Image (cartoon, rainbow, N blue to C red; front, side, top):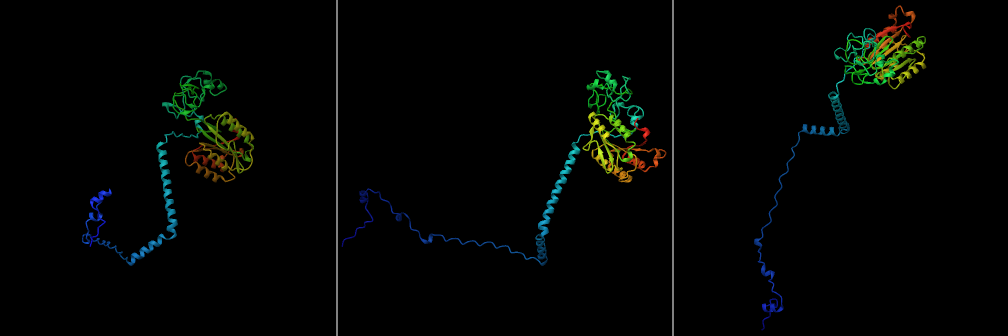
Length: 406
């Protein structure tokens, strides 16, 4: 019997004849793998045991329950966060205010504190300023004097130790020849030997409107002055608070004269106001603030005086409220009778409370009627005015119509 031919295996000759290279069989190249050579898979590791919770004691369980209940209450959820936020912001504001105060205290430049002298003696006795040797040692708290030119009025407002280019206006002061030397007058550092800032009259070389003749010294002196019915002061900010009630009818014309005379003496560096109290209100030359003592503002005030007439009762508190709101240094308070509105004691207490810090002085003036000239000290309103002046550090004076308008 014939042997069958294996067609799956070709001889090299046949392969060559077919033109295709012989490819070894994959089965022939891979060695056989037995099941014994395959490693068994590793068994999974067991997880570590979980920690067991420790049971709480009955006391701890009660405390935990109470603590949880507290934070669930409306107070803890709503009120407590608000209070915490409020306290935090208040603390921030307090810290900011304290920091600002410290900053201002450290950086604020040193300032000279003016000593307000509400004393009539600085206008009456002795040389201007009421001082025996004003200006000695370059003291800028005293008036400037010069010893070179004796032909100068003792009340000259000048500060220079020698005359300016024009001798005539320097010697004439602020009189009718002022216009001839108007270029010598300026507001600025004093022209004398002192260093204070005030009403300067020179050009910086020590010349200008001559200071009064006397023992030489320097400085701006006690500063600008005011004088009203024999009382005065060196304040720059002045308010006249005067009675314009019906009882002043016979003396109001004299009061107008005295007010105009006092205002006319004010220097341009000063500021002022006039406030009349009548009824339950007041009339003011300016309700918005003090006016610089310029010629225009003085004339405006004179017109106001002419338009005002006395009427009503005597209540000074509204007028005093406005006066103190305008930050004065010196107040003149004048009346001819009891404060019938609030009462004398109420006005005394009000003034004492407003002047307790010593920043404002009140000079008080009492008009005395003819029938009370023998014993004015017995009048109740005189006692009240005297007390007001004493409490504030001011001065008191009583006058009659014979002493006014001249």
